[in-house]
Length: 619
Image 1 (tube, rainbow, N blue to C red):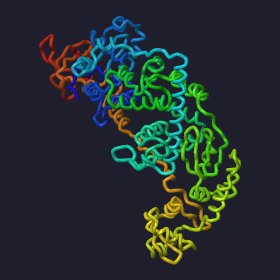
Image 2: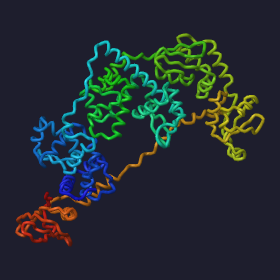
Image 3: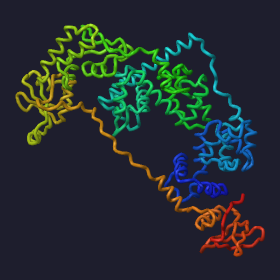
Image 4: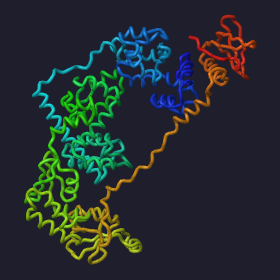
C-alpha cells in the first residue's frame, strides 16, 4: 500500500460519510482484499494503491477517462463549469461522464467542484510511457468507422444470411443441450471439454470440433447448461427451452447475449448501430475502453463471434435482426427474424429405408417424442431421423409399445407407415425382453462379488455378450447356463446392452432405470462470502460515527499523519468555548493527548484529543 498522504486522509473522511452498502460495493468493485482492512484509513490507502487505480481505470470508458484526465490537469477542487468549458460540454454532461470515476472513488465531485486524487493523476500521467493514450489522444480519437450504406438488395441478402446463421446456431445449440442432457461432458482441469465429449457434441450439432466451445459458451451464457463436479450438463432451463419454437429459442439466446454486454458497450451499439463493430467487437472495445484489460477484450471477442453466429451481425455490420435487438429488444428482433426462417411443421415423410424426413423444424413436443423412437441424423432446415431396432428397443424400454409407436407414427406421417417400418417395430417388440437385467440380492451379490444379474433363455445371446467388444467394459461373467453377472450398476448394464443392440429389459415387475448421466443432482447452495460484510463491520468499529469530537477518529487521523509526516490543521475548542486552529507537524501521541510543533510559533504544543473537533491535512 502507498504511504499515508493528505489524499488518503481526505478520502478516508469521504469514505466515512458513505453508507455500509456503498462501502461494500466499493470494496467489491475495486477488487480490494477485505481481510487487509481494519478501518477506513486502510481502505483509503488500498484504493489509492497504483495497482488498484490501474485496474479501476481499465474499466472506464473513453468519455469518463477524458473527463477524468482533463480534471487531473486542473487545480485541485476546480469548478465543474471550468471543466465543462475545457471539454466543450455542459456541466450536466460532464457530471454524467465523471459518474463512473466518482462512483469508483477515483475522484470526488462535491459542491460542483472536482477533485482528482494525486495518485490517480500520477497514474494517468504515466500512461503514454506504457503505450496507453495521453489526454490529447483520448480527446482526438476518431469515432468508430461507418461503412457505406447498403442498398435494398444487399440489405436483403445480408438479412437472409443472418437468418440462416441464427437458425443454424439455434439448432446446433439445441443439439448440444440435448446431448449434454443424455450424457454430461467431462471438463478438463485446465478448462474446456475433454476431446471425446467435444467430438460427441460436434457430431450431434453437425459442426467442427473446434466450434463446440463457442456453442457451449453460448448455452452456458443463456443458462441452458452449467458446470458441476467436473462435468458440463444441461439444466432444467435447458430442458424447458429446447421444447420452444425455434424463434423463441433464438430470442432467449439473443437476449442473454445482449444482457451479458457491459452497459457501455450495449449503449455504444445502440447509438452507433450502423458502425463497423465487427465480428469480434474488437474495434468497438478498443475504442470504448482505451485501457481495457485483456480478460475484458477476450470476453467481448467471444461475444462478437457469438453475434455473428446468432445473425446479429454479418461480416462486421449489424443485420436488421441485430439492429432491432440492440435498438429495442429481443421481441422486436424476433418480429424481423420470423418471416426469414421456416415455420414449424407437424407432419413428416416416413420412407421405406426407415428414415424420416421433416420438411421443416418439427414442433417441439413432436420432435422430443420422435427422438425417443429414432436417431437424429440431421437437424438443419430439413430434419432427418432414422429408426433402427436399437432405437425402437430404447423407446419400448422407456414406456412405448408396438401399438403406441404405430399410432404415433401414423398420426404424424404424410405417407402412411411403410411396411418395412411396421415389420421392424413388431419384430423388435416381440424380441424385447429376451435379455433381462436386475439387481442381485444382498447375499448373492456378496457371494458373487457382483451387483447385477443378466439372464436369457437364448444361449447364443449370452455367448455373444461375453465376446462382444461393446460389452467388454461390463466385465460380464458366466455363473450359470443361462446367467451372467457384472460388478456394475443395473442401469449401466441395461443401457450398455441396449446401446450395443441387444434386446435387453429390466426384470419383470421393476421399472426401467434412467439412463446413467441423465439424472442431475442439484448443486448445493453456494457458500455466502461474508468477508466484505465483515470488513465493513471492522471499518465501522474502527471509526465510529460522529466526526466532530470523536476521539478515536481524531487519534487515528493523528497516528497516520504522524506516520506519513504530514502537517495538519487542528481545530481546538478552548476552555472559554471559542475555537482556534493550529497548523501543526505531529510529533507524538500518548495518554489521550497529541503533540505537534506549531510551525507559526515554532513551539511544541500538547493538546487533549477530546478538545480537537476537526483535523484537516495540509498539502
